[in-house]
Image 1: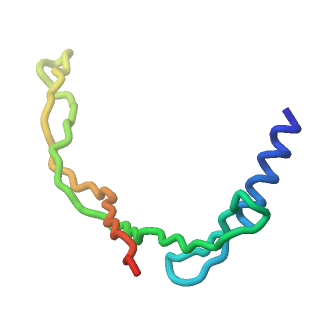
Image 2: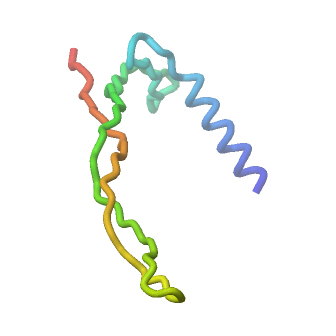
Length: 96
């Protein structure tokens, strides 16, 4: 198992060493050729904006209500609750 881990670690290190950041959301990657040389390509990644949105939901509420002196009767109701949920906005990279 250790030889697989070492090979995987070397592959990840080689891939990370072949990348260079050239601008905002833009990386330059060296692509190996079948020959002994290598070629350089520019990879553009999309822009992602993460925001939150507030929604109102009706959440169930369970309680008890005194029915007689000895018995408490279960009561089910709803309560309006505001929750925040994440939203994403993905923009495609600009083409040159």
